[in-house]
Length: 246
Ligand code: BV8
Ligand code: ZN
Image (cartoon, rainbow, N blue to C red):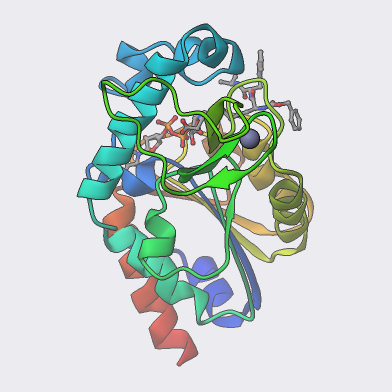
């Protein structure tokens, strides 16, 4: 595995780094991705399971799906990619980790400053009074969870057609505009507005690196494409940082 002398130089000298992660960073933990031959969307319909309309039409079905994914996420561990990003954070004065994932694995690996653009599967909220819950588990026989006020409770995730959380999105745009080095890791870069972030970074002069198993929509725009597994490439990048920054 090799990185370019330019990237090595950047790792040594920059102060501000921004990372965008997608489902590919959790793939080696055993969490299924969305696209690609055995991705979730090849078997299930996103409009039915990851949309507000789909939820209102069949809340039990959507809760069953999120519950199933929550069980998977509780049964897996963070992988070397998550740990490498948690280590990387300590080397840079401004390090922003933006994730599209809802699996909580970055936090479990020790990352401190995580911006969750698409929410978190551990949180739910009442659609009437906005009360948050972190202990909702919908068992098969249980009907859809309701709040004490009578309102319907939904997973705290961003569905298609829904706005991203204001603070996280603004903060992610600020970090992408401000950084000197941007990594897009394990994302197919097709879901907007998250997929704008690498372009925002590049437009503001950042060096843009992509880590993925294959080329994506973003690949034609990046300064450096590192093809391979995030769980192998990121630990290697951290080894390079240790050589030039400690
Ligand atoms: C919005 C819920 C307005 C959480 C998700 C028409 C109608 C309506 C909307 C639209 C439309 N056309 C476009 C839109 C906008 C839409 C959109 O972008 N659609 C796309 C599909 C065309 N976006 C929205 O609706 C967003 N909201 O636009 O509101 C607005 C506008 C402006 C400003 C503010 C608001 C809401 C988007 C969020 C949707 N929610 N899921 C959940 O259940 O998880 S989408 C879903 O896709 C997940 O959130 C996921 O995070 C996201 C992105 O997927 P990836 O993470 O990239 O995963 P994927 O499987 O695709 O790729 C994995 C990659 O990893 C692959 O490249 C693979 O090669 C690689 N890989 C695999 N293994 C490894 C690896 N790489 C390295 N190592 C490995 N080991
Ligand atoms: Zn309520």
